[in-house]
Amino acid sequence: MNALDIMQALRDVPEDLIDECFVDTAKRITHKQSAANPTISQSSVAYNVPTNRHKKTVRPYAFSGIVAAACLLFAVGFGGMMLHESRNTQPVLTSGEQSADVTEVQQKTLAPLSAPEYVPLELHEPPRTGTIEEAEAVRIAGQQRFTENGSKPAIIDKRAYIDKYFSADSEVDYNDIEAKSYLYHMMLNSIDYYRTAEGTMNCAIPDGVTEVVFQVDLVNHTAYERQSLPEQPTIEMFIADNIQYTATPQDKTYHSQRNPMRMQDFIVSDNDRAWVDENGETFGIYRSVSLFPGICSSSLFPQAYAMAMLRDFNKWQVTGTEIRLDRNCAVLEGSFQEVSCRLSIDVETGILLNNEMSGEDGKHYSNFELTSLTVDAEIDVKRFDPDGYTYIDADAVYLDPEHTIRAPHTDVDYEINESGQTYGSTPDSVYLEDYPDLIAVIGDNGRQGYIYKEDFIGNPPDSPEESEKIAEAQHNGTYVPKTVNVYDSDGKTVIDTFTENLR
Image (cartoon, rainbow, N blue to C red):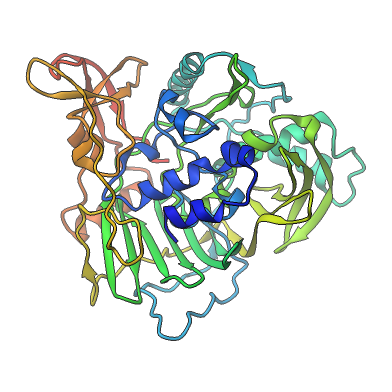
């Protein structure tokens, strides 16, 4: 399934719903098939609206997104971390398919973390009214708070709210403002409440059902996803050592791309995440999803669902609880544009286990369901073995499974400094050579400047031994994040620093 297929699959969805929820899908998919795409890994301020407004974004898109909302999020969602599984056996490949060589998964429970310092839960307020520039200033301030907090997220004491509202003997109103604020928070920040996930999911689309297998390790920054698409070749995606591999087992081909240095996360209050401008257009501050390689990002990190569908607490209710895959879930029902929605949210993690969306005529616009899920178990994420595979031109980006339609290059008229270097914001391009020499960023101290493209992309390990050393250092906490200089537009004057974010 490629970007063109996905847009076709959305043909019957109400236009307003596409604008609000799904426009990011094809964009992220196109990026994900690229030789490299530094922009999507960063946190951003972005409109939830049609493509012609992408130019208004202060920072490049980073929705994890609602991609799932249409379940079409397949071809390549992003974000990062994946997974769930109650630990059933993985779906069997159809005749003639061969999965890329991988290591076996181990199952041990992770040791508990030391007790964190909790922050109070915010009671929900209506979206902020303002400009995208004002929202960007909030995001920049949030980056500074994240740095001051030791590069740790701000988390709440979830157990207190689970016991109060969602335990078996609870008699408190599910729709208390505090209970609904808790669920909203968990969906906005699910990646703060689990470390590993693996499992399987089914996505219903107009042409059939896509079966997805996924694994994600947020601690060691590795991920895997396999997509079995109707009438399409199986796709496998692997992330490890800051490199993503995308392979098709049927024709034994693959391509790889460097994942860029991860952008800095932020601490921004839940009530400062959703915004509306003077024209009534909605936009929001989105956290990075750089570790999710595919469709499951919409389930494992449903922040875009929360901001697009739950921001108005009057349009949805908690109708009860249910057990799914041995997880205690809150059931949310409501209306969004012309569509009725039913969501099942894991109250422990904020992971979206089930999504049902249908129109007034009863027609289903999208459905997805996790069929297995395990969180916070020790896992050995599958890694790609290129033996027997043919490498596809890393500089070529294809829009079709047969690799015959190449994506066009982007012609951007950048500013040029006295040294002849181009500088500016990264464009909506899938090719690295289309990016400027100096890329606009916000530094660690809030100064706006530029970093060199080479620093932005980073370099992959030179050997498997070096990869193992880096992974071990990240695992035991001795890894030192990369810090590079931020320059004025002249490419010479240092005005700030920019530190890699390993989340």
